[in-house]
Length: 236
Figure 1: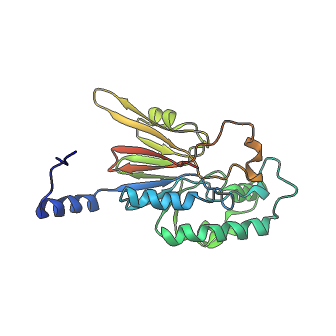
Figure 2 (figure 1 turned 60 degrees about the horizontal axis):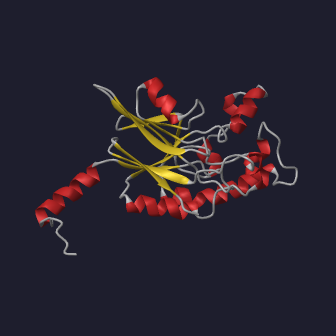
Figure 3 (figure 1 turned 30 degrees about the vertical axis):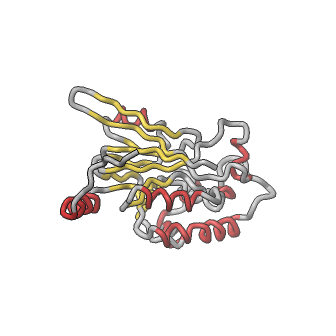
């Protein structure tokens, strides 16, 4: 079939390239729970970043698992705390080398050690920051807003509920079994709620608690200009 798509002249192409550079195109990386992330997830995220010409990265939280320090039952045959942490740091290296300026919305697993310290009445001055412990160079926050869209880890519920409650487009992770995007349209309002899935290895002992749950939704997200959210699912 003859290709009848219009061709851009050099001036139009330069203008389009300029607009793409100015437009924020966010790659949203799901929960990876290092060192228990899916072995193919990093390359999947790299490919997605390049495919959609992204220029910013948000790690949606739970970058580390901290299984050894969980408030739930831990595997007695699993790694000790020091070794698991060392493995998590090693696994995170490729992420921080690829995207040294990423923003992280702090997840419940990321803050486990700080929670344990708080429960033990340890003053926060004794606690190191995430970058110092994990060897990252990221900006760690509870919430970040980009082009009017809020990014949170998602411990308060689902993306659809958060978006409706705050009347603001919302992207979140935390819920491993959900990957969707819903739009809510009113006379003067248009917002969306997006769950982006996760990047965990569901066969790891750290995920044994969920072995009889619904299968995890492996994937990441892309948000273009604050107005176009895209779920990108990982085909194992």
